[in-house]
Length: 228
Image 1 (cartoon, rainbow, N blue to C red):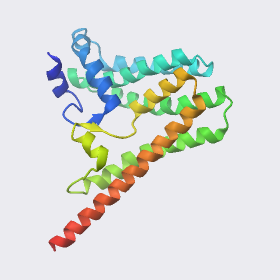
Image 2: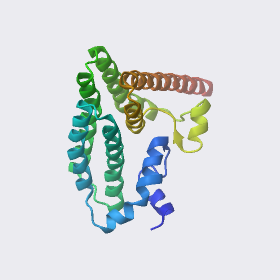
Image 3: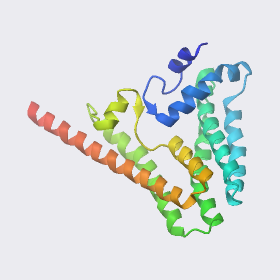
Image 4: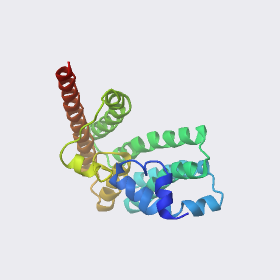
């Protein structure tokens, strides 16, 4: 199976995706899916590999081996995308695999900042800041934006976000970008800056999406009133 066929076959290939997500999924992982399928590797085994990997990453973070931790975080990110893509590619999707994958992510994403806070003796203010921003952003994305956007007949995008979406890219903060930023800041040893930048980007994306939603709702309300 050639790469083009793989791109159309897997989740999000027919939809827009985040830029870092595209790099992970299309540029890297899609090249290895046929080989993994041929070797009969089960997606749950890939997910379980991340379950074993993330405690070791936390160990490296606690003892401030940041270079190794940064590299392993990127391994985690690649594996995190691989299991789902492989499950769809081989039609081996399982309830256990999806739940384990979500559990891994929920624990790991929060644990990164918790472990670093105690390892670096940071003020709890930075920990509370980044965890609140990240989890509030995720909560709004799952339970607020999705339900409100479904009520709209047409979703309008604006500015650079519209320009990127026309090219099948999403502008915003997601887990792939967060892990990429964490790895970059770890490599440069800028840990406190990492907390602030990640928190800021989550807040910025949340505000932008709220404004965009309200503008869309206002425009749709005006259109409905004009049609009456």
